[in-house]
Amino acid sequence: MDEIDRRLIALLQQDATRPYAALGREVGLSAGAAHERVRKLREQRVIRSTTVDVDPEALDRGVLAFVLVDSTAWMGDRADDFAAVPEIQEAHVIAGSAAVLVKVRTATTERLQDVLRRLYAIDGVSGTQATVVLETFFERPLDAG
Image (cartoon, rainbow, N blue to C red; front, side, top):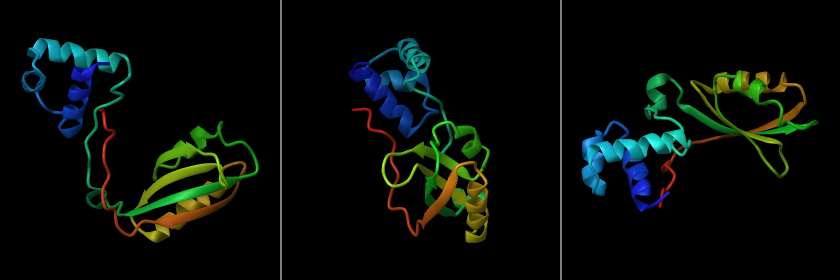
């Protein structure tokens, strides 16, 4: 991956709907050359997906929590169990005092409590510690530079 690829990624992170002609102009390539580079970045799985950034409040998911999940067993083979809980946006096997870290978005704290109950139903889960976010200063995409 060279500097042009990195600039293309940065531009696409700002606006993934930008036409290839505009992308090409920004990095000094033709529209076709920019399209080919982006295609290769997708093929190599550098660009994993194109998504829409939606306001969680607009979808009634204004409560954000990070939950540390304790376990009595290795959780690395439980990805499907965590993925089955639709309110979980991310799940990570971690090193440290807990086994898994999950990012949860719900409408209310009562719904968060329901998610915690469902986490306990996963085989091997022995405890949780939830931290509710009061305010998000910022979230940013990965720096391609």
